[in-house]
Image 1: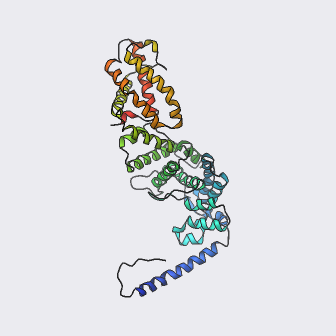
Image 2: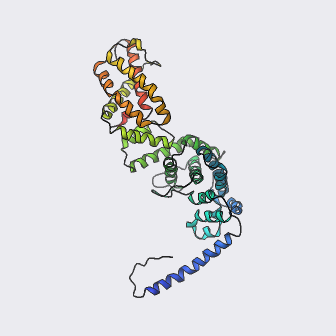
Image 3: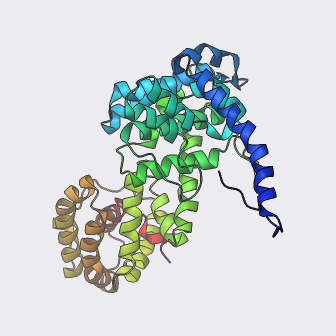
Length: 389
């Protein structure tokens, strides 16, 4: 063991001896607890979890374990992890809390679960998951190292988020007794940095479903997702992204964290292009024009109605890009899409310089408004560029 003394002693050996006297019985206790705990399997602690309350309205730790087991299996199926190992890890996830070692040395939760699971002959990824389920514990902490551990870590945190929001106990001010902010950011980090194919919408719905009729907040799914998107805002600000970039992506409310991240990177890159400022201003202008109009627009632009060469050119480019970019949007190639859309700067500028939108001719007016709507829809497939400053 190691210790640090805050004074310079004339007799260092005495300090060493004193610390040894303190530590030796604690190490002896640890050895005793370790040997005692290993006399039974980790799984044998499951019944005792029924005696420990997770939260009064949400049941016991055994109830939580059952939900985590089911949710971890569901997540594993979504991300291609071993479903049997994920459900096994979920079943054992809280068993070490009932061991003598963790009861006496609370900081060893998780790590003792891993060692006891190895002693019991559990699969290695199951054992590792029992330790890594709490990761990341803080900003910059390591993430779970294998897919089973990722499934368990997400399941544990999402169960807590769904449950606490489900009974209306949202974090208020600095008060966050269930560490929901840390849990939400942890889920987002794991999904984004491990590039997992998970959607917050379906993930939250599944976590809520597993509670049955215990939850009282009818808006729990939306509340959890809004809360997590809010954590995205804080995370990306810490990463150095500008507030308006974050707002542009948040406006589209993408619920796949990996997809959200791809949009953030795309918009951040778009801002470096020469055409960015002009197209952001044009999008804002288009947005204002459409907002002030109460016309019922068409589903498509009527090419035969177009008159001015500038609107004909813009309409043609919008149609070409719409077809060309569809695979980009489907594949999440948002940066490539915005680079292509940047080519619209010249025809958009020419259109607004030469063409009057709100003309008296109703058919022509509606056609031009429809074209602008189709133009804006292309950008909105990535983010609301009009919010960029």
